[in-house]
Amino acid sequence: EAGVTQFPSHSVIEKGQTVTLRCDPISGHDNLYWYRRVMGKEIKFLLHFVKESKQDESGMPNNRFLAERTGGTYSTLKVQPAELEDSGVYFCASSQVLGQPQHFGDGTRLSIL
Amino acid sequence: KNQVEQSPQSLIILEGKNCTLQCNYTVSPFSNLRWYKQDTGRGPVSLTIMTFSENTKSNGRYTATLDADTKQSSLHITASQLSDSASYICVVTIIHNAGNMLTFGGGTRLMVKP
Image (cartoon, rainbow over all chains, first blue to last red; front, side):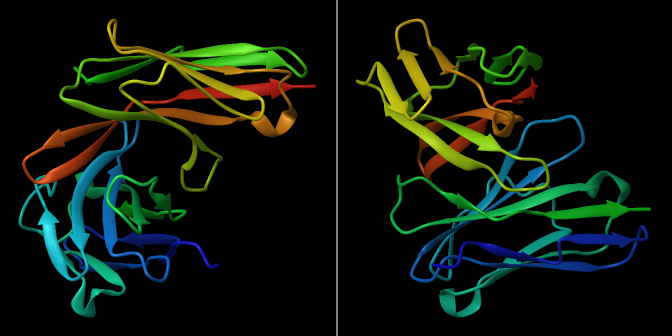
């Protein structure tokens, strides 16, 4: 079974530009999560989808971040406009049932110059 | 202050030796506690998961313990191998009105040397 895949693996953009990260969860997993790790800090929760619905978006830092999961399959996380403090590694995870261990992707390393 | 604190931040041991990593948490209400292993450049991979009522859980050479009264957990690695070099992250699941949320510790970076 294919794991959680994220694209791109790395992204370097300038402040003020727009970037879109993509996550393909494990097939059949209704729960999809986005997390972020900024330099020197712990991984922090951003939001949780159940199928195409946002179950919990309490971790989203501000309205420059927009997550979508149209059709309940893959998800995108758009940052517009990007700021320097948005640099970090963005992880996506999925699980079939709430409470089961989440399977993580390898992350997208985002660098804002 | 993070609600999940891990120690030490980093650790170097020789191949074949044992080691114990610590995790203290303050989050509540508590659902479960997980230990993840994260290799450099990869995503975290689940090693163990323990509910409130479990005291210990093993996965091969990894043994996790949980004391829910003192809110402490440990991960013991036996007979370390070079491939154990990674970050080990303690993750506590808390229950809140929107569902379950994972709260991560900062991790312990383990290096196993030959």
